[in-house]
Image 1 (cartoon, helix red, strand yellow):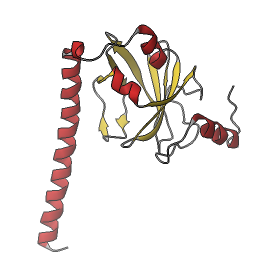
Image 2 (cartoon, rainbow, N blue to C red):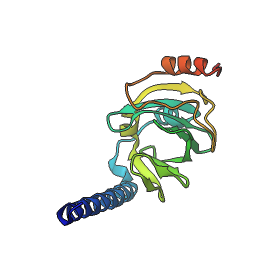
Image 3 (cartoon, rainbow, N blue to C red):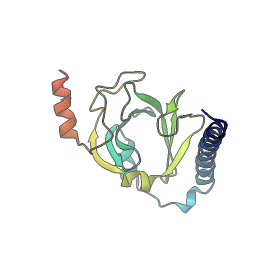
Length: 176
């Protein structure tokens, strides 16, 4: 490789690292700002909040992450089944003033940022709710702390609970 190509490669690598650090800092700054300005976000009723985090399995879908399955346990733990992963992403959840949902994933490299998670990441609850495509009571797929995913979830195409149940059946899993 000639010197010009080496320099160009070094510039690209430096730019990617800089952008990655900036995005991580921006996310932390936005989350901190949201916690400090929680009253600016729409209030959800207790029943609306419970429909999201009270012993619920949710199927989320958005363009950037694709399919995701998340379980919110009553004790404040959460288990994220992220596309392409073979193990659960484990963490904790809390709701602030029925306006923010805050997630903290423990000792994990978050697949979407490839950066370690070291703080609560807070979202306006009404926006999080808008990404919920399906919801079911209980831990529908028996997602567990430090557990393996039932199978590798694909990012695309968008799936649904019925298709996931069929995939479970192929793997000799049973769902009530």
